[in-house]
Image 1 (spheres, rainbow, N blue to C red):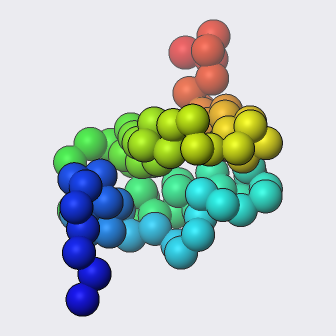
Image 2 (tube, helix red, strand yellow):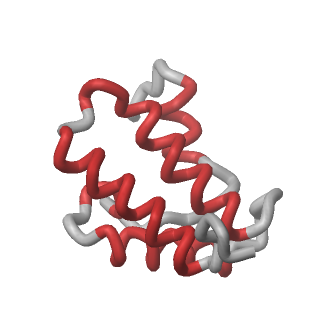
Length: 96
């Protein structure tokens, strides 16, 4: 039995919002990360926000919880995944 001492660990493992593919945040391709998050957000029937906000929230949550322990290369990839998510959902600045 795994003991989850931190609330963030519980949220990550038992989130009622999205079912994420295993290891999605560790992948090397930002486009693949964004596409997976978009797919998960669109199929989820348990999320409380629109798919874009749900996907972006999960990505931001992961980055914030990893904090200083997240390697610079991976943080840069995840920032690129944020941009790709915006593009996939048509939410780029100035595109309104």
